[in-house]
Every structure is written in structure tokens, then in C-alpha cells.
Image (cartoon, rainbow, N blue to C red):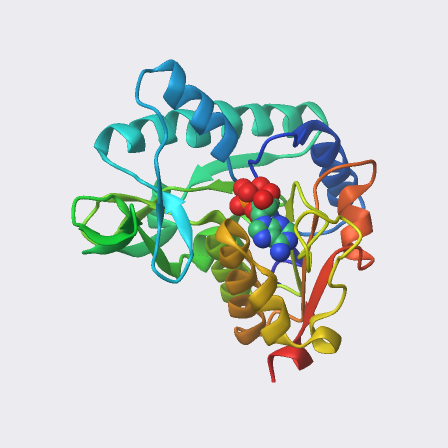
Length: 275
Ligand code: ADP
């Protein structure tokens, strides 16, 4: 049996993990098989500032944004993602009686990926090529390791970085890693929860939510997403194309956020939308 659901919780400002972890504990108690993936962008930005190596971001010519990940940034990234956030999440779940196991994508080669050889970045209106970045994308998920844990009643709590085939840690987008994981496990559902209610037609207007991709049209959804939302939309499309029945980009905030997203609060992608 595979995972029922992959839940990815973003690491943006204003997300309180505790109520979400309580919901996950309840779901596990009701017998669901869950894989949790988390981010950590806000905490990494803060830690970077405190350690005197301020966060920097790259915007590609197509408008996708990503963290500039030099060697020192990767260390700080690991401190935040694999360190404090992952261990505190596992601690909290274990306190609720959940047999949680925290792993980064490096551990056991869980998320294997490719490092980007050259990144095109727009700086002051000009295209700059960056060659020493430690970032990339997940190409393979070790489903055997995940199934071993799930079959044993454990809850994997996963976080970037991933690792290349020759053993180099790489920063990967957690939404797309979650999508690859859901697809590889043939999970029924993927929830991508962050600090916005879903994909908004107008980012300044919280009531402009696009509710269903099949009604709005995938082009309209793609056109609405800017910056980091572009990666989330891409992740949702990738998961659906890998056979995940339902993906919801929804809010991680408010009481019962996971339950609400499962009931369709957010932007819903279904198999039919991918056709
Ligand atoms: P997380 O790190 O929590 O997973 P991100 O910060 O990567 O989440 O993505 C959510 C962000 O995407 C929002 O905070 C918002 O600033 C941005 N965004 C860009 N375009 C849109 C849009 N059309 N609708 C909603 N959010 C958008």
C-alpha cells in the first residue's frame, strides 16, 4: 500500500506549524498514511541575516525566483531546514504519539537530483550566468525507503536539500520535491499549503482565488502566478501528470487548515485538468 496523502507545509512568514502538526497527528490516528514535507524559507532568511550572510535571490528570465545558494548559504539552509525546523516538527509529532522520522533528501539518497550547471539570472536588467550555485531539482525518489517507513506505521517528515548521484547536496524547491514524492508514491492527494489561500488572480486581493483549474483553464492559472507561486503551480501540474488524482494549493493558516484544503479550500488541480 502506498501513501494516501503528501502534505507540504511552506516555510513562509506567518505559518505556525503546531496546529498543522496536531491535525496531522489526528489524521495518522485515524489510520491515514501521510508523508509530510516542509519548507523553511523565512527562517533561513532570518538566520542568514543573523549570521552575517544575508539571503539573496535569483530571478530567471522566465520570472521564476530561487535562493542564491553558495556553499555558506547551503550550510545555513541545512541549519534551518534539517536542523531546527525538522527536529522540532518531529519532536512535536512524537509528543502527540506519532512515530515521526525526520529525513532530509540527502539521507539514504532519498531525493536524488541534478545540480544546475549554469543558472541564468536577471540582474539590473541584464542576464548573468551563475555557475557555482548548489541548487538543482529532484529526479528520483527512493520509494522503497519511504514504503519501509510507511508500512512500519511511521510518518516520514522530509525536507530539502536533495543530493546528486555523486554525493553533492543541492538546494531543491520543496514544492516540486513534494510533487515528485507524491507522484512516485502514487499518492491520491497532494496538498501544497502556504501563507496565501491559493492562486489569486490579483495577488493584492485575497477574494480573487482561482478555485478550480479545470474551470479557469491552466493558462489563466499559470499567468496569475508570479515569483515563487510559479514553482507551486509547476509542482501541482507535475504531480497531476504523474498520476496524483488531486492537488490543492491552499492556506496553511487558520484552524483546520489541512481539513479545509482536503475539502477543496484553495486552488484545486485534478487529473482532468491536466488533459
Ligand atoms: P512557501 O515558501 O510558504 O511554500 P512561497 O512563499 O514559496 O510559499 O509561495 C507563496 C507566495 O507566492 C505568496 O506569499 C505570494 O507572495 C506569492 N505569489 C505570487 N503570485 C501569486 C498569486 N497569483 N497568488 C498567490 N500568491 C502568489
